[in-house]
Image 1 (tube, rainbow, N blue to C red):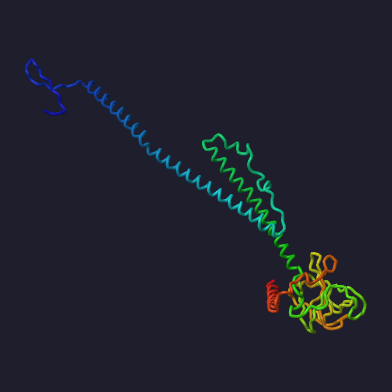
Image 2 (tube, one colour; image 1 turned 90 degrees about the vertical axis):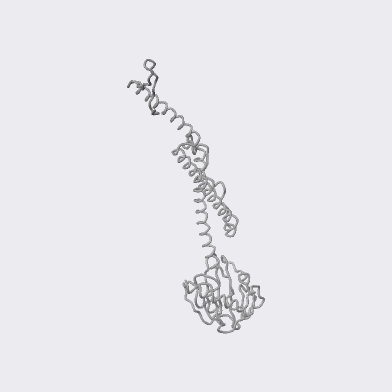
Length: 322
């Protein structure tokens, strides 16, 4: 017998006869079978989805995890940026500004313009509002700190350039080589070597022979170059700015003209004994805001002859590059 066919015993003639269902019953049986299959499939699908999740949910879940990782990395980058700005601030306050005698930037000014209770109210009410507000706050802090630090470094650069200019103009070297002895210094002289009367000696003499090279002791502008009627003979006066002037007297030759700009280490004259002088020497004066100062307090006489020579050569090379 075929497995797909069903038979029944007919007692009237004692024969097996095939059972044939009406067409309607066949349709009902098919619909019943199809419905049960759908229900079983739905139950099975729901069970699998609850246990393991759908492919779409897995994809979305992976994307969410990737976004969380990116947010974490961005947060670390923001923290690193803030730490770098704090490092700049420490260098600013503890190194550059103290050296240049500048006041520190107040912390209240560095933090002005960010924060506040209602500043991020438009970011509230979202699923990740706390994270959005945290990131936006850090970004605002970086913007403000970077702007303030840029302004601070700009002012430091300006002050540094001005400080360098002031140092270049400062009369900070000996006008002649240090191998020559110092002569009469800054003091009251009871007898002038030429006039024979008491007189204040407002400078420092250097016991140099005729023909000794005389150098500018700092950057500046020549405001006098020629014969001096006050007794200095052939004389040069350089205005260094910042209230400082230097005088070089009793020269035998002048190498620069009035109104000329000079650099420290430039050759400006040759020593001699012109004017009220009892012998060859260089008279050197330093004036600050019109007041005579002791010149030996403005230069270091402890350098060796070779060091002084190297220093002059370095100044000459620097002057040529300009």
